[in-house]
Length: 139
Length: 460
Ligand SMILES: Nc1ncnc2c1ncn2[C@@H]1O[C@H](COP(=O)(O)OP(=O)(O)O)[C@@H](O)[C@H]1O
Ligand code: SF4
Ligand SMILES: [Mg+2]
Image (cartoon, rainbow over all chains, first blue to last red):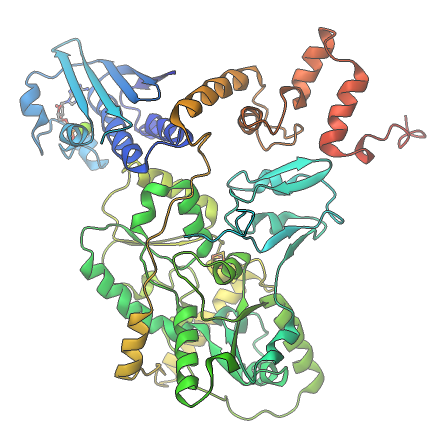
């Protein structure tokens, strides 16, 4: 099953709508609440990163009976040093973005802690692709 | 654990009276968890979805929704008859009627003791504060007070179940204390009947089919509006002189526990939020679940606007009730009267502490399409496909509350695509459906009478 969501950079009013939509789907599929929670937290952070740091992006979600795979592909500035960006507390978010309550620098590490598989590919000046996979039977 | 009856159905205090229901669908459209459908001209409840919030009861134009209660005469099965009165009850009466008059009238009706539910709130509040200290990593803690909210979380937000404080509410504490006080005086447990006067359906269900506790120490329920009418009549007709209050003249801030901010006003400092009205609560919990909202310490969540002052069985205006209750507290404080608190002996303290915990709550997911994930995926694909055919008008003519709900009902085999009026028109154009068949479909949803072709004979 595929779902596609489009995200506009800077549109903080809708940040979180993809996470909510995916959450509803996972509940309908009777996925374990713990796995729903992990997945939704990761999706929310990746979604917000497009809004906060990129120009625009597309989220593709693929779900089958075994796993959820979400790809966040954006056009944006890219991430020069991914290892550094993954550090807790590291953030390049602007003052304004911080005032709005985003930009604590915990997003990427939060995604990592809440996903079974995480892949980040980024090209400076072009954009970033984040891929999250979570398995439904993670035991 | 939510108890179910033998047939596996969840108990509800709300019943749709088929003899009175006119099939108007107002209830279906207002239900926040889409638990109602219209079939054969009558509203039908899907028991596993209902959270007993009572929104349907408010909008029913013909009073076809009944709220279950014990027969009042049942109180006389017990030699000791305790009325457990929530503070909102006193807030229903005009200010010219005193609390003494109300209490004496309740006793004239046949009760031997009257206790105010909120007597137990101070004790509970102390335990809340301890609970918060002992569970520093569990944030936000969610109040277990409103049973409709506990059920809402069970069915719709299972990931937040562990945030609910696993302690009983003031009603149970007051009931347990009253029972223990009397058994210590030599009465047998079976001689004591404790009847809770309920402002809502949710509290009735919490007593008859408790969540997270084995049994309630409350023996039965009397609906607040019923007792209000009985008491009011007595006060007006008798107007006899009454003595001072029997029992404790309880007066302190805890009286307002069941109002909005009742719990947060007494909570430890921190980020404590009070949210009332089930629609607001759902909106907030959606964001909390995504961790879009962080850093909150405590949530007081109530299904009714203005909390229990807005309970479906409260006859008075909810804003005026809340005003009166706050005034009662202010009066006590401003007149320099001392706050009268309830005393607990060390033995009572220990007894209550030993009996105050709730068991772990279990999710009761209603959104799932199937227990089996692979099967649920198949159903979901079909559901999205079907939803794509539907007009997204959400008119409810199909007897389901929205186009999406109809698509879901179809994959669950409780509805058919041609129940959609737009689909019928498309089928008629393609000569896949004749007029008689489409009329029959509508009759099955809305009953014969709404489609009686003779009824407009003189008009058209
Ligand atoms: N999609 C993205 N495009 C460009 N830069 C990004 C993107 N996602 C993350 N970053 C960079 O990585 C940093 C750390 O991200 P994160 O851990 O989510 O913290 P925050 O978003 O709070 O700054 C960001 O400040 C930003 O510099
Ligand atoms: S807010 Fe009070 S009256 Fe309303 S459902 Fe909850 S407990 Fe009942
Ligand atoms: Mg971020």
